[in-house]
Length: 263
Ligand code: GLP
Image 1 (tube, rainbow, N blue to C red):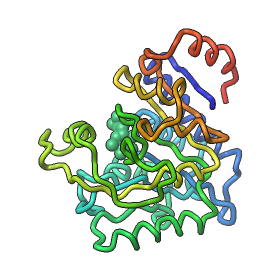
Image 2: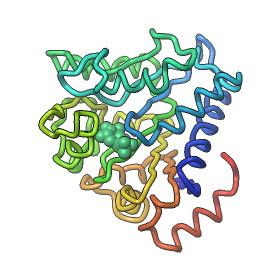
Image 3: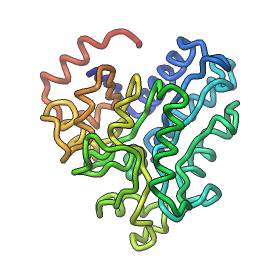
Image 4: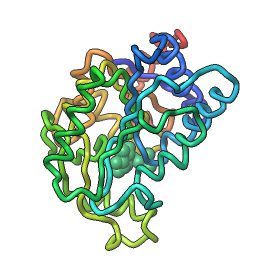
């Protein structure tokens, strides 16, 4: 596992955006050689999105041959609903770059056939040859995408019930009223994410420190789903200093020492 520690959120956001640009450009995407990117929602990637939009404007990167997959959607929430993840990603990022609409995929929260929707999503990812880079945020309880604690570490895209802590955290998008947060979501599975060539999990702030500790220093367990990253051949945890506040000095020193290269 690679751990990148930046001093603050701004530095972390810039590094993550630089890394995405580096990976896309290294791939040399073309219509026959698309780059496939998995994207999280949540507030953590907002700074990275800002830099990515800026780099696009400056001509440092093109998204014309990049395919996007979202990680999840609330059941009952459609594409145009501003409380949904699809709307969020268009509003905060996709509309600012030269993405092609036909290259953007989200789970449809309005489906009535969950199993079919989820199987199609997995099949669509396969059709593109899998994901090159999956970027994820992390819940305070260690969830990735919407794979809550105790999710199967072999899970695939499916319908999931949200944990009370996630309902509470996400109530900020629903008038701070937990009862308004849809209790069910469609989410990619942990195995879906682990199939990607590379997975980068971003973490910012002290509230994520416990989850970061479990991800890096503790055993792999479904109690802290993010810990599965230890099994990935190309897993990166990119975090700011506050998110490392529960790591031992030895761990921090080690990763600071070895991670001298920009990429
Ligand atoms: C949500 C999302 C995750 C996200 C996480 C953290 O529940 N399903 O994809 O990573 O919460 O969100 P934030 O970055 O706002 O802390």
